[in-house]
Amino acid sequence: MMIKVENISKSYENIKALDNISFEIDKKENVFLIGPNGAGKSTTIKILAGLLKPDSGNIYIKNIDLLKNPEGAKKYIGYLPEEPIPFINLSVKENLEYIGLLRSIDNLYNKIDYYLNFFDLDKYKNYRAINLSRGNKQKLSLSMVLILDTEILLLDEPLNYLDLETQYKTINLLKERNNLKIISTHIVSLAEKIANRIILINKGKIIFNDNIEKIKDNLEDNIIKLLR
Image (cartoon, rainbow, N blue to C red):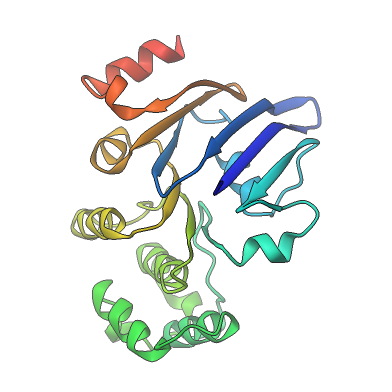
């Protein structure tokens, strides 16, 4: 079992962000979390990444209890937050070096060159991250996650701030990557291009969790109907 989520709940003060949700992912799928703002998508991603503790429930990553052994579970995970957060006082290249050396990545400098070229960051490689535009910070953050080549990718709105050409390239790159991806997005067209499975969340509850083919025709209309 790659990921198993059992009866997870999470509240912020009097607001229930997640209400007893459960799901399992047992193979390398492209799973999309979809739902309106405030539905609980980002909270789910952060809990899976080990950044938030649920109020109740259990999470297993490759049969490792994330809550009891976070370090053991996190080594399989690459996480992209909704807002890009590179190390702002390091250069673009130093960010990639640092994250790669932390994880002892093989052929690190070849991979750094690849992502600098792929995301058109070559000309900014010596710029401190604090001086980058939002779009280039997003490109750098994506590079920092993808360079790890983890078995599981947790991506929260990965196309944020990207120009259309880079969005298209990123979509194709994600389609080619042979790992389990859980992607939170409000962009239904992205799900149509990549997803195997849709997990639809509304008001902290899962209201649909199944193969995308079951609702793929007129996907956006079908999602709206399910949310009613």
